[in-house]
Image (tube, rainbow, N blue to C red; front, side):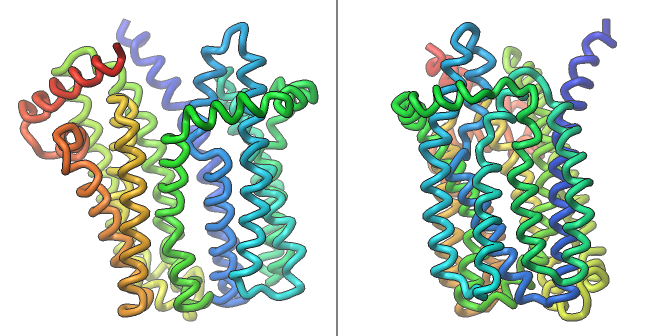
Length: 445
């Protein structure tokens, strides 16, 4: 019987690990590309590449941010209305993706100092990411539990496209790197089309369902806006440093932050695995308090290990990988690594917010984070240079939690059962759980 209870947990962990592995491979691929480009072409080109990656990340968030999970949920519960639900999901993407990427591309060309020879490659880079934002194939597979299919196909894609992409980066062919990166982004969804159930008739149905798509966007607007704010908050510093200090300095800054970005995937994976146990324990206050403490301590301990590793090994690793031109980056990394503590805790808090149906706090927290991050960068970067961006990142993560959660009773209870569970007495955590349970049940009714 005990083995039967453990089996679903193992299966859940295996699914999360499979999806995480493909995402880790993608991040590692980009990390190696930046290393090779940096060694051959220097910080300036690397800074431009970082700005382009930040831009498409924001545009993909504007196109589908926060909507994918809700879309999977709709398809799982769709039953006989699964086709209509799929057409509505398609419509929502058709409404958002084309204008978002068209406007984003125009802004990038206006604001960035790009060479004429790079224009075509940059345009195709944006087209690739626009196609990759059409996540309907991934959603249909996930709604059917096809996690291994998604992971396997994407790993094959990364291996196949990384060979020419890394060769292009090693030879300093920046335009070809952009083209191949755009192709990878487009195929990220393209390789999932086979047997996904997506057909031309469904796409046509999506075109005819634009009104339903707009209604869905309105229904999920808080979730959508929250995701957009979260992504912009983590990328705004790249644009501000680039605008105020130039592409060479942002190349140094991005090289340091890339290692932390890679570590973030680990935070997502760990909290995803812990999520199921948290959900199952909510019917018993005592068990819920135990699981909250276990999750909080595990996430905190792992963040300390990762941060310590980057502080001790990171500087030498940057110099060995990128070369002596990136000494500033090696000096930034140990201090910037402090953000890992807050990033890991934010991932745990986000899971608690889902359980407690406190979606409004997700939006307010991300909006606070965005406002604080932009304000601190604009204030500190002109005074402290690139170090101002590092200080702004650390302070921004911490202040976003304070501003969004500690001003209300419910917000403080949410912090107690998540971050507070690391060291607070179990009785204190249980009292917060009891108050939150009442509000959760009221919202269900």
